[in-house]
Image 1 (cartoon, rainbow, N blue to C red):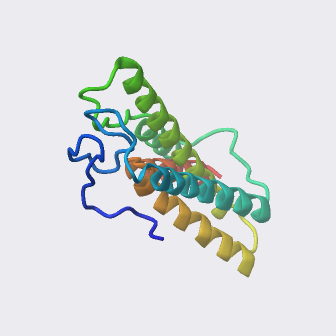
Image 2: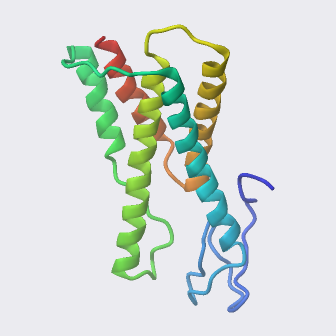
Length: 176
């Protein structure tokens, strides 16, 4: 089983028209595409791995202290990270969609991209906290960051959300 789907286009089995890349339903007839279940399972696996690895790393590594006040350079980094995290997502394949379907797609992508930025910031903040590192910490940190790096492609989230989380954490770590 591959983590990422092949780049070749699939064809709807009902209307025999080509479907868009990463599509779950046909744009023309609304029928579920044959690979819908496997793509949904990949998305759930990628999201679950990112959340579980980050939480496990944060629990094992220990307490993270957020500073009460920010210095000017730290505030600039936090503002840049927050601004990048709040950028709206790009919509794909919504030409024939209803208003409710477009809103659902925007809400899902926006919330998942904010969650990815928050998880990246949390993992980076935990990794930058003072204290000795053990072998378990290094293994969990590697698993967490690898899962976070795989999440944007599997969940169709823009890559700049990882940079937003990194900027947020860098600003918080800079003011310690």
